[in-house]
Length: 75
Figure 1 (cartoon, rainbow, N blue to C red):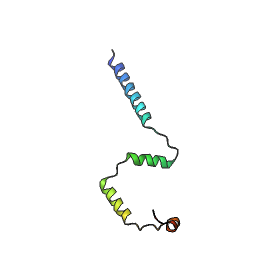
Figure 2 (figure 1 turned 60 degrees about the vertical axis):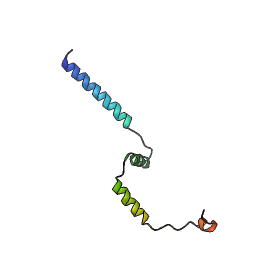
Figure 3 (figure 1 turned 30 degrees about the horizontal axis):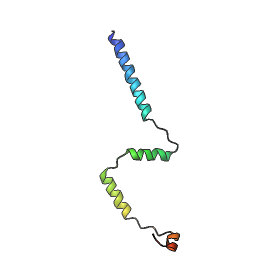
Figure 4 (figure 1 turned 90 degrees about the vertical axis):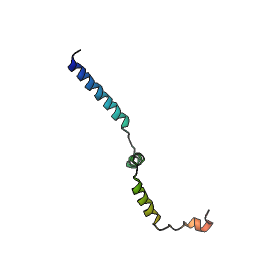
């Protein structure tokens, strides 16, 4: 077998595998929000960032109760 033909076929096989892999990874989203949510599920937040975010959220003022909770009581 001619080594150049073998190399060409090998390159074609690699190209075909790359194409099938990229097609498997492609995903269509109906809205930008869906794309962001998908990305958020795939991304791991570093521990330090998560801690700082939780600390910041805990310092936010508490939202007042809604009128219906004030009227009917808290459950």
